[in-house]
Length: 383
Image (spheres, one colour):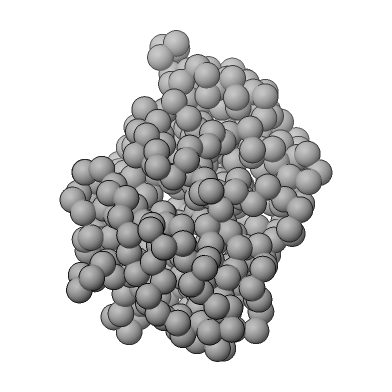
């Protein structure tokens, strides 16, 4: 394999034939195939990033299983972090050598983007899910074969990624860059759902269903904001213990209780002020509403497929309770990722405790570990 670092000139972003190693999804439900691909020339608003590490997110797994329609062959990966190697002609906000975290794609021009809610960008679908640029071109090729990159504006299951300058957030150079990628999606989603949507006051109660990376981020955010009690709910005892270390005051395993709602109400007799669903199942969303006080607020970030019916009782809502769907934590990555990094520096968002690293050659093992629940947040690292 030709190492792209020897063939890419920062002064020549239009250069072609950048050969990189990528993990390609060729069949729904199948393993990723490590292959050499060629990157396209950069567009004016794009940057080339050498990936140091990339998180494995549930959304990547859902797409690989066909729950999110995606043209194949494709390269997934949307929690990348790395070093800028080249910039397009129109990029002035970043330069070669900058350390960046890659987040989701957004246009930056529609009403939702200009109102600081780019997670609901009018073009969120085509910029993140279609596997190609808005003009229909792809960022990767294998011979004459188009490889659908541009997944979440990055496709960072590769040693080099092309991203929009908008979704590349500059971070300080003294941080462990290979661990920072999950800040761009999963951790941003959980923490943002609490900090940007629920917005609890100190002393208010918070219950979180699902202790994956998103739920653990919600626990840490609740702790940072002074929530009390903080109730963690999960089937996995080890994950519950991690949540306790990160700030949960009470732990509930649904398999060890006959009435989960009663157990929660015992801890918060009038009901909890806020709840968060990071599972996405109908039964969990119902429980997350049932435990609320009146008024109370539940956010759902769990994903169980694009078409997924849930059933709730209207009476739970008529008493002033709210149910909100949240994407990417309602966050603007350009301001929220630096805020999370500051909390990390302050010792109030120790997300690194969730991470186990895998070499890129073992990316399928990392995905399998995530599916089994062995690792809360697998991160694939590059040499």
